Image 1 (cartoon, helix red, strand yellow):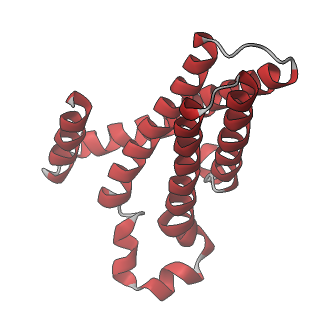
Image 2: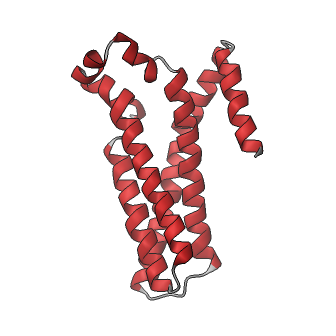
Length: 165
């Protein structure tokens, strides 16, 4: 619940024209992406190792999945804040949907990146929920492998690489 209020506090400060808060959230979103991707890759690698070696699903394996979902949801939250307050997000549509859809760079930041990443994080969330209902270790590892793996592929497909390097 505290995170919920913290989120709205950030939004409130951003709307009060405190530019430093916007820059902080933007930097946080960029920096956190490295950590979120790393934790997600670790969760996938752990599930592949567990699945192929027929290991027992332990608390450690569950924590890998949990950190993966926490990392991606935190990234999503920061991304949504940026999307609605940034001039490169939702505000781009004020110039017309046609302008946004014609230009590849604008389309990536205003449409493709947010939509595909929401879909990716939805798949990761489904994988987390499904694993809790499964009984065997093999099926839990397989569920993480498939859903987290698909989520990672979608995320990597719509990363704004030009902003990273």
